[in-house]
Image 1: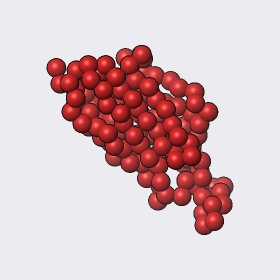
Image 2: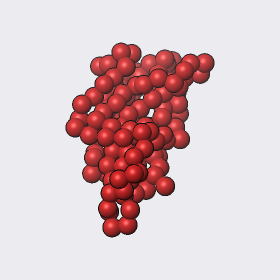
Image 3: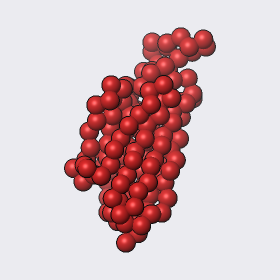
Length: 129
């Protein structure tokens, strides 16, 4: 079954940087868009950044100018470069894949395999003051 696995989270001091990675695996034919969400203690999950397979990006206002989202379509991998981190960025970060198509044996597209969303397990980012 398709899976998303995040990595790169950890503890960093305010003003520092981290780079998150998320790789999709398990019979992927194509992914329309990938992105990152986060959920801080006591808050709802929110969109951080998203990127289409064509490279178009969107960012939450709170991270514009500090975070950069990119992807490697050939590897079905999305990245989130986080610079100038603030304590307010502390959260569990979740990778998301949207518009996923799966393939069967031999790499043949499964036309009825469309999945609107796939979620990773999350990686914790803690920014200390």
